[in-house]
Image (cartoon, rainbow, N blue to C red; front, side):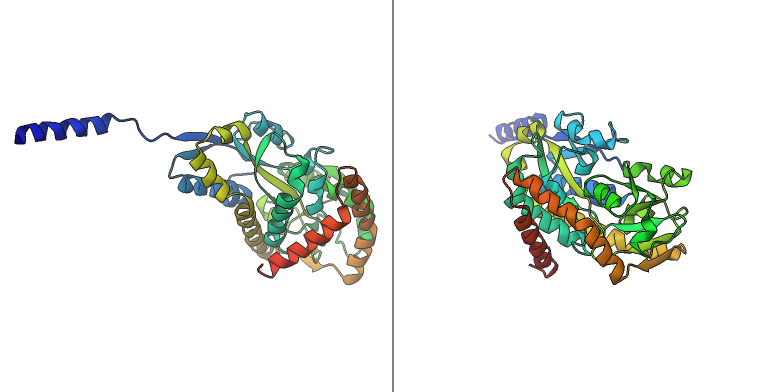
Length: 341
């Protein structure tokens, strides 16, 4: 009898050893900024690790060594399954996104976390119904830190100092702002910033503080003007291939959803605030002349760019949205997040 029990135990052990391993899904992820850039390391990679932990290792990501397409083609690359997970700047594809411009307006606040969380809440309440991201699974929307002014040769103390400057911008509202302020916008991905400034194609750049160090521009930039509340912001979306997401077991989809949305927006916002603080410290240590825009400068800039927001109200009305009400609610929401709500 004892021998039979031992044989049964051995048979059970053999059966367990030959049972199929736990199912695992490996998805591809790609970033078009360097691996050490906070957007990659502190954003994309950090979140994929959260997914792996939340799903008990059932969902993992293979980070591609290089983005398979140029930044402006990223949305379609994710939609078409060229890559399963990535992020993009909606402004890189002019004319495709309209409602996302709400987070690109200037003077919204000094915290990427507050702006990003408020933006995600507005997306869930209002913007998602417009289906501007149709074809992908939106993980979260977010903004980089407040956009500032950095130049190679000429310090910017007034709006007049920007006249006829050639400024690299990322597209969207900042494109229109640049023209309104008297400068010439050069719409190019951030990955081309160093070459444009080094070659003299651009006289300056509108960037958050982090990006000056993140794209190794401290050797080229000589002057910085910090605008309270930010001269502008940039809208981003992190997205997953919809078919790959839908094919995951419900338990894994639920786990991903739990760490998407506001959780994701807060993760990216906190990352950028920390990176901006570190970047500004490094900028000053590099000897770059940094000043704060005067109240007169801010008032002049606001007066020149305000018609752009007013024009957006008219544009979104055609899609059934009250632009003025959206912006009032958005600004109020940013205040709530900043206050800890």
